[in-house]
Amino acid sequence: MPKKEWQPDICNEKAGFLFSHACDRQPAANCGNCDKPICKKHTTRRRDGVTLLCTTCTKEAGAEDTGRGSSYYDDDPYYYGSHYYGDHYYDDRYDRRSSYSESRRNDPRDFTEADSESLVAEADGDFENDMSES
Amino acid sequence: MAFDEQEFQKTLTYLSDDAPETVLADLEAIRQFDQGQEEHLAREPGGCGWYLLVCFVCFIGAYVTAIIAAGTASSSLEALAVMLLLVSGAAFALMVWNIIRSVKFSRIPVFDLDNRRYELATGLVRLAGADMGADQPLAMQVDFREHTHEDHLQRRGKVGHWNAEFYVDQWLQLEGRLVDGTKFTIRLIEKQQERSRTKRGASGKLKTKEKTKISSEAIVSLKFKGKRYPRAAEQSATIEQYLKLPQWTTLKSVDASGSQLTLRSTTRASWTAGAAEPTEGDSTCDGVQWVAMMLLSLYAMLHASK
Image (cartoon, rainbow over all chains, first blue to last red; front, side):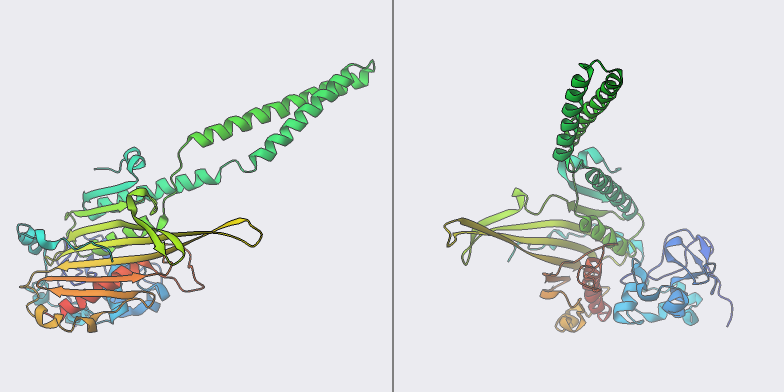
């Protein structure tokens, strides 16, 4: 398998809670498996206590190998979706190491902060919900 | 703006419109504040009345005996009198110290917050923060006042033979925008009925019974960008197939209209959040899991709408 070329100055993990998207944090380490630069939030320590893994590799390694055990998803938004809806909760191609490619990092379907900013000006005053109690 | 503890003590309501990291830091400050309050409560002088009585009896007993002993001609009894006077003085000092301590304690207001509120808020900010830009503001309001606070009283009435007071406490509201442009709102509501009933027993005595009924409701709303999820209208007809909620909760309603989804669910179970102990045997009703599954359910539909 050819070695991946990661962007060095930014976290390259794309796992999210509800959907995958680019991470805008600074990398704090590299994944001990795929060498991906990852931020602190996307880092999990393997059971050996030394090796650091990205969220994608942690999911592939499984709960036992990473010592997460029954608390696989506890306090960690990146594992909720796969825990309750299976590994293919959202576009699972994003979370498979084998499918990582240059084109993937520029996937036009990735969400960015610009998407949310583009909506700030939209009128959404009608978003308030009916809070009347039954 | 940093968490202002003094202001918080006045209102017992946390309001914020900051980035998720800042909100998490504030919630941690509230947790520390509450732990300090709990430690203060644990130091409350217990059995104060008995302690004071024992000190008083020792003081009087030792003092009177010392006076009697001092009145005798024996030098050994004089020495005993001095010792008893010292004991009497110590008992008196203990008595005064205990009174001062009790008065001081009663003057300090104590706020024992419901841990679930800041623990659930923390869990939800962590979840939402994973899909928000680091600098995107998160509007949050957490009301730590008792749910029987007069502001939460809706009405008084009857339920069968019971007199009931109905309280509705919308204690948490969280709003923000995710990086896909979707605006989310999460609300948590505590509904409580305080019931009481007075009747005369066979012996002629008046007896009053009281009981409380509580239910919690969670409301999750998403306003999504139609361009991102073009098949949402089509999928919304079958939205119920995407819903997965914890077994201890009940679906109240799900509404899909236009680019807005709203899911309501309720529970009467005693749920926890954070590192709280399980309440019913080994099964924990985790509040963070509850809201997380509501969000995941709605997003399962959105993922199928791409």
